[in-house]
Length: 64
Image (cartoon, rainbow, N blue to C red; front, side):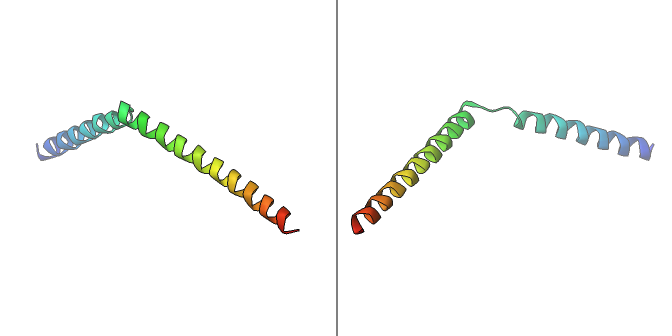
């Protein structure tokens, strides 16, 4: 009887964890908005890097 109870509790914990983890896989609107913001910030950073390289090149051309 003790093995049955222990097996039942183990199975119950496994089922609860499976349902809990499957709920974490769905993206809500906040996660989607966060990803869009991250992408926008990353693209802006890339544009700033490109612009700074152009300025750096222009300054070096002026020094020559």
